[in-house]
Image (tube, rainbow, N blue to C red; front, side, top):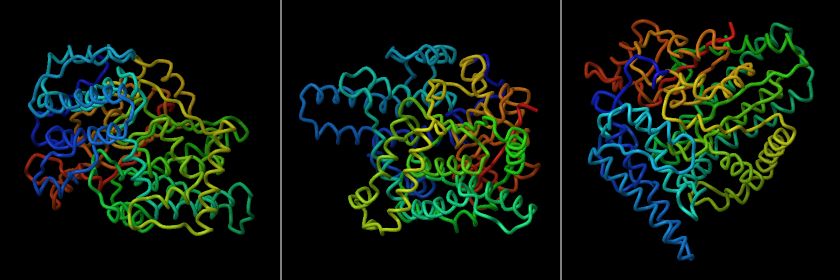
Amino acid sequence: MEYDTKTPPYTTSDQTSFAYVSARDRWPVILVSDTPFSKEDRQNFGLQPKTAAIDDLHRAITACRDDEKLADGKRIVEGLTKLKYELQHNRPLTPLIDDGRQDVADYNRDLSALNSPTWFNVPWLYAECYLYRRMSTFFALSTHWKTYDVFARQKLSTFVSSRPAVLELAAKYKQLINHLENNVPDSKTLEEIDAAEKLLFSEMCEICLWGNATDLSLLTALSYDDIQKLQGAEARKSQEKNILVNDLPAAYRTLKAAQKGSPKGQRRIDIVLDNAGFELFVDLVLAGYLLAAGLATEIVLHPKSIPWFVSDVLPADFASLLNALADPQALYATASDDHSGALSEGEVSELSFLFEHWRTLHQEGQLTIRPNLFWTGPGSYWRLPSSAPNLYEDLKESELVVFKGDLNYRKLAGDAMWPTTTPFGDALGPMGPGSGIRTLALRTCKADTVVGLPSGQDELLKGMEGGGGDSGARKWAWSGKWAVVQFCDGKA
């Protein structure tokens, strides 16, 4: 913790924060979905019964015919049930059992420094990371369930439910890639072409930004129709006004300068991923566009190493998505909702094009995946230079590192109680100016920490309906309605 910001962190004991709401309402339902909620909680946070960790494992165990594997699974259920009890009864967090991963020592060292905190009196970031890391120990210490992901079913279900947006983007992607890769002649002037390229870059990044509105750990009760409202062209246009800070022009200028300065050289962009399902699909759309447009020659994707915050990407999710797109007709034909049906020949063709394009990029080394244990560590990204120096040095080789989603933003800023007018670069600490890393955060706000806002913006948003008012809570920043796109040039 010595490398973290000294600005106080948000804690679960602060009843005006989303940290408290998370500990009280979200975390129990992530473990098991039989938790009762008030009408207000259901409306505000989508907290309704839905497949959760214990429920999913019960389902898998029920289908198990191997007695040893069955007993092994039951032991995991017992561990998860005990964890839920401790959480809801405000018991002290206990040291992680050594499951062979190097990060156990990091978690236990931080826990010792916190002096045996209880679930409702602990820094939010640490507690939430600890929750998922402890869950993973039950599986890592098992014999038959080591690689089982209790959230995999939910991730795939959310992708299937995103069918309209998937088909829309697949059609546009095929048209766009063919245009870029085939050098289709353009009658526009150079100024018009440059303006169009800037607009296209912004559009692709904003698609990626709002794609993370499908976050299963927060929106656990979205219906099929609700998910559609968060996706699609009209939704994106209506939400442009909700981007409070938009540094995409600065990021674009940086990438164009690198392209002009080294048109035939290697230029890498890294994407620290957030959610699987539809959002991973959108991330790959962005990656393919950046390569086809010549803004990068290599894209490196950084997934998590263990099931994390319900919907975060694992390496297996990448393979699962490609496998689903390899036979999209089968995927949608077996979907359980009433909105699915056979795809048209054109839709199959567009999805097949997308699959082949991504597979080729991966096979040729232009699209790679690099998991690292650091991304599921207990602390903030302020620790990167000291805790993962090799990763830190590697990221310096990138032209731009894109951090997706709310958790990555919280970790970048130390999940601290910064004044909202704090410059983004200041909140990044050792990852900010002079770090050698260019950072672009694409974040829809789903937690209290937010920086880089103009003076008075926070007060204005609090004054809106549902914004928190005089309650002391920054409720406007909890729902994902508002977003920030923030850039820091650590190479300048």
